[in-house]
Image 1 (cartoon, rainbow, N blue to C red):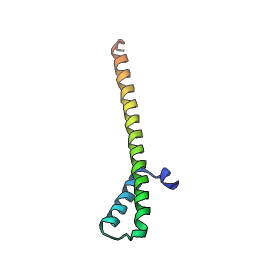
Image 2: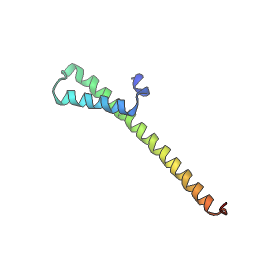
Image 3: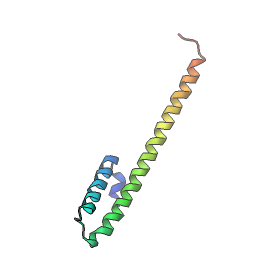
Image 4: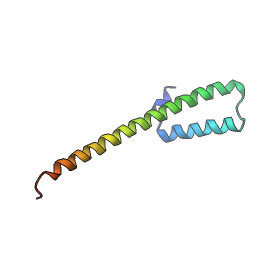
Amino acid sequence: MSESKDMRYGEAAARLEEILKKIEEGEVDIDELSGLVREAAGLVHLCRDKIRSAELQVKTITEQLEREEIDGEGSPSA
């Protein structure tokens, strides 16, 4: 689904919840089931990618802050 690539994490998670609820409550007929499972798999992949990206960004930022702190310790205070 091309539109899901632009979806925010919260939207994807909410849609996953909707799909799960429909399946658990038996609201899905067999003809619709495979499409929903395919959509859910795509949403899970999207969420994982967004989590990995956020983790990388946080790691990069914290490493940068740690380097700045180490570099700042060697300089005289103003």
